[in-house]
Length: 214
Image 1 (cartoon, rainbow, N blue to C red):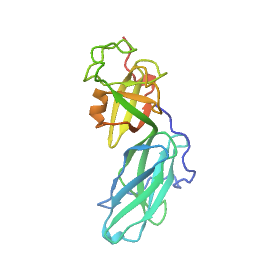
Image 2 (image 1 turned 135 degrees about the vertical axis):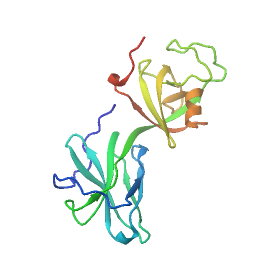
Image 3 (image 1 turned 60 degrees about the vertical axis):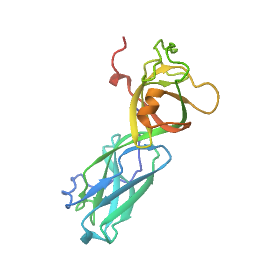
């Protein structure tokens, strides 16, 4: 999988772990996002903490440090919303901190955020069922796979669309013509709820994580 490189260079400060989160301290907004797009993190704390600053951080494995990505303020009802632009590809641990300083701050439970490379995709299938793909696989209505012009057959690709992410192998060549860089089989499109040419997010999976080819 693509290794995330350096994020924003503003460390959380101090080697001590944050204190236990004040209950309740909730954070949502992990999952998937597209490179260059805004990522939204929503959360809530005790309404008594209204007006306090909340900092959302991501962990940078290259420096082994938590870095600040966004900050916001707790609203009178105890909710908060923070936004940042996804600038690096990869999978990141994220969390929110609340407190006067890094040493005394409390941390929310962690979320995982995966940032995918955006690309235009189409889907195909009807009229071709029963034929062999360029990778030698019979195309069926339920085959889950993707077509790409150059990636080797069998390469595993994480495909993100809307709020869903699936893993699919490269099973064919294409698309040919137009701006699309990927073709989804009908089986893959159905799993994602993908019905027309649109933008998806993709990330190839590291070879070590792939099953041995036959």
